Image 1 (cartoon, rainbow, N blue to C red):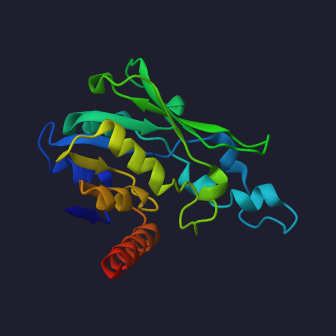
Image 2 (cartoon, rainbow, N blue to C red):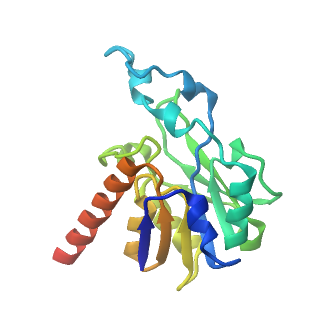
Length: 210
């Protein structure tokens, strides 16, 4: 079962009892300062500005402590992307997405915090950003479906209930559909929500055909 709503994540989490979800996989806004200065009308020559146009809106506000309290209340285990931008509970565990990035001016990897409760040693997922960039993007921080499939295969158990409080492009929904996991997720922005739902339905339809 995949249930996705267009609503604030606090409203979603308020409906669930303590420890209802087995694993939360979230990618919240990072609040990165350098994205806040990107112009909304970059010149054609300003490749860097065009690359990150709109990021100031996506990454403007970090989650509040109330959000973190609710996330840890409703889920048994958590994986948080961009946790190097937040103050997280102590944990010796983490995962790395090795992007196989060939461009020296771009990040070669991304870090995700893994809760101590999962008791999983540090792991590295290798997936080329150049291969990922061949996919049409509907969100500025879109991550590969393969990355979420890898996370589910390495950190989730059969019949686990998965939570995502920031659906974005819907990659986690496609991964959960492919691997048969129950997912509850939400996206606040109606445009991203509609785009993610369209992407998921198209993927489901293609799988039905083949």
